[in-house]
Length: 168
Image 1 (tube, rainbow, N blue to C red):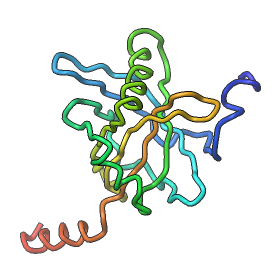
Image 2: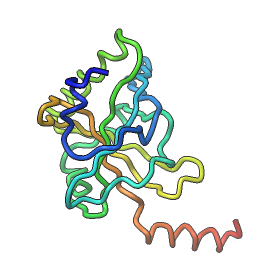
Image 3: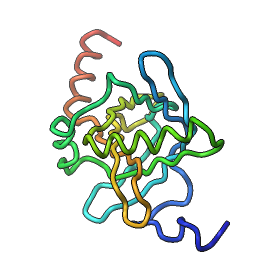
Image 4: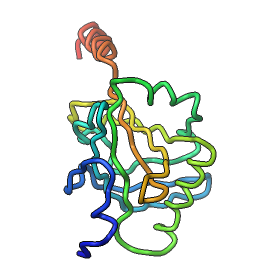
């Protein structure tokens, strides 16, 4: 690796080992594109850190149905229980697939949108929603970030209540 490369100037403290590996599934009405990605975890002072990505799907779906506008996700960003943050980095081949991510980042930034992804895979303890949004990061330019909003504890109680009721 090149010691003077971008990795030596990353903002915030970060873990070298990706917390998640999978793909972005970028969809329109006609087709799906899969972009292999990793999620690198960063910690931000004064914010809850992301604990685990066990419940995250292997493909993070970015389609028209899951787009949220800023008024719809601003409360999530303001919520102290929201966990900050991962940076999603495309890995692997060049070509059209890798080209889509910068375009996606640009649109999310300009129009102040986010993708809301439900995370309830497998036996992942921490279920909730992952919000993919874009921001201009110092020294790195526009980046695709993920913040995770765990399901509220009372939601778990209600699920348990209904499970006991129905004898699951």
